[in-house]
Length: 151
Image: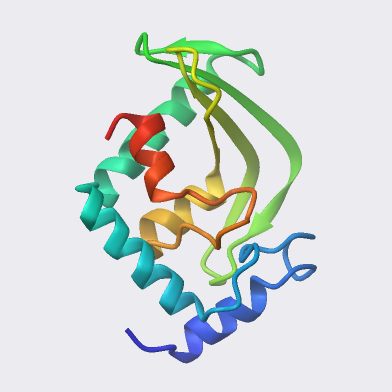
């Protein structure tokens, strides 16, 4: 994959302070194409399909909304709390505007590990296979996806 002008512009938009105060790259200094390629390789190693993972996250986000800000049990496996804040966030790829909706997902088995999903992070994951950089608060780490989402 090549760093096209679209990806160069998106990477510039992902820097801290452009769209969000912390940005989308965390501690990463690599081009986003390298981040995406590495995460795609890891997902393949773990046997995780991007579409299946995105579908599961979308399901948890939608079901979690039914809790109206309170934690609820989804499918007997997960505890999900969805919060909404006023305002919107633009995609760094300049292909949409997303509400500030965040879901915190924990497995019901008592493990402390949780997954933080936003409408924007789910869009970036689905459309670009961009999990965000290591160290980013909204990173959808493939190993964590495998464990938390039972993929």
